Length: 440
Image (cartoon, one colour):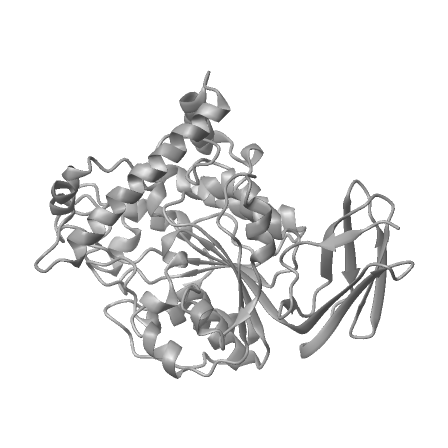
């Protein structure tokens, strides 16, 4: 009889979304009947065009259940154990979201002391193209819980604190799907057909960069760049590990024995900063896994086109909502924190006050950051969307060195709005930021 398999994201220990239709999907031999059983419910479908999808009705929260899948003759049986039904959120964006728990202020203490039983995490493998190890990477990915400290150390700090707060607030298991990549534009995470108007420039620039070039040569050139840039990063690591004050100019000078910084490298189908590439290689791999919502924390890379970010973010939200078939899929968008870079006087990410977060101050050079923040505030995709204002809660000279309290601000305010009641903890105002979440 025909064979079938689930998508790689369906593993032991997974979390399924409560109170919504639950999609279980995968691939198989044409015409194979796939039958599923979950919590006393039974559903079936037939493999069509190599794909299948079973839909279970909405269910309440529960823990430690089993999903059983089999064909009509019971020859091909799949059992997925230790399944929880609770809340599932996708953590997307660039390095702000990617920033690992072990590097977050208070993160090491959390790994040593927290006893977080109801948070689980699945990291979508960081791959750009289908190569010799693509499927192996996908198949080796699995859901983990906080008892696996080696895995938890590399969870998104924002994702972890969001999930921890939510699990305590709602008394359900919360699963986070990490789908992020440092240094990427929002254009990397959308499909080409959604980039119209001002944002078409991202794809136009890419097309111009690769025009007339052989795809194999493009990939070869990027692989050579990767080897070079790895040496450069190792050298820069030496610089920042040394004693004394550190500046970017000092780093560039120290690394000249290797050469100049060539990041982000030549445009190629395997370059993660290429537009559309990560939607195809990462987002599409978890579609249409049922979600409770999306956490989005990104923006620095789009400073080069700040006026287009309003449109770009709107297009991403529409693209993902249509892909998931949910016009009201919730988005929580983290606003960029302050960052001084080399000096408080010379970097556009450093706001003078909370007002500077939404002011277009050309005179003082804050325009790019302010316009990016404004794009978040006034995005037309307001339905089921919330913004978390943390621009005055950064660390000044380390854009990702955020306190645990800043990471938690996002989920506290959202939980109060979405599920009712007061936030889990009322905190005093930090820095000068008010930490409020609102419709953007």
